[in-house]
Length: 322
View (cartoon, rainbow, N blue to C red):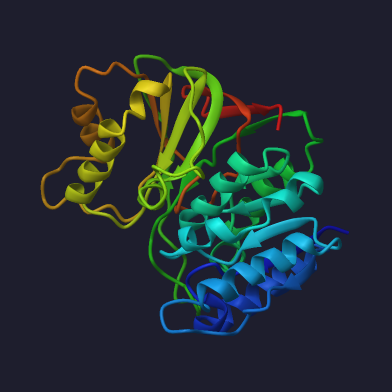
């Protein structure tokens, strides 16, 4: 039986959304998962779950717990980057674990991949945000997650994108109606296939630790994966320009751009891919866009640091060596 320890490194979602939290626990228990609650479960300190010291202690306790196989964020937020200097990377190098989360958890995922590379790091579901979703879409997110965690270390797995997706903000605590679903499609520029080591996560989180020792070293063998949610066109342009000004685009061979949930085009009609292409300017990088490992539902689970081959035409990705 798989054990998942969960923590709240920023938003105190277990205190704010007890109904969704309870639904997530029931769903995972029905899947045979043993849950280990972090010490800040049900607690709140204003906009966060606890002090920086308390949040780091919660996560370190799960790192040190030999019964915990997978460490999962409950949700994202804004302030996970504050924990990075205080995590026990040495323990993780001696006793690697699997880490999973998305959004603001990007800070923790990439720091662990940088400082404790033996750990398996997955950009994937968060306990409350993802597994508190109602059926039937939660089942698809679970299937993607389960397929990745059941792949043996160093193995290879191919996954196909969902046929439909949604970013409708509905049914957070109680069920109102089925969410509107949209036909799925990936978009490619220059090349329909991209292959390389995949690294990245939530762009809005990256600027909180970009010029730090916790950000991964990128190479020309890498694909940069970036996604975001609930931002407007002006903010998206700013964040893409941040990566360009920092030289990030010069360090990689291609970009995988996730769907942008609830994007606000500020009445311009411009989408994130178009904005990214403008920011890139003369930097010629192939892009596969609208990948489903992001804030939309269902969510595909993405092993960071894996060798990945994306096929935009088939809407498939093969991950290996993770």
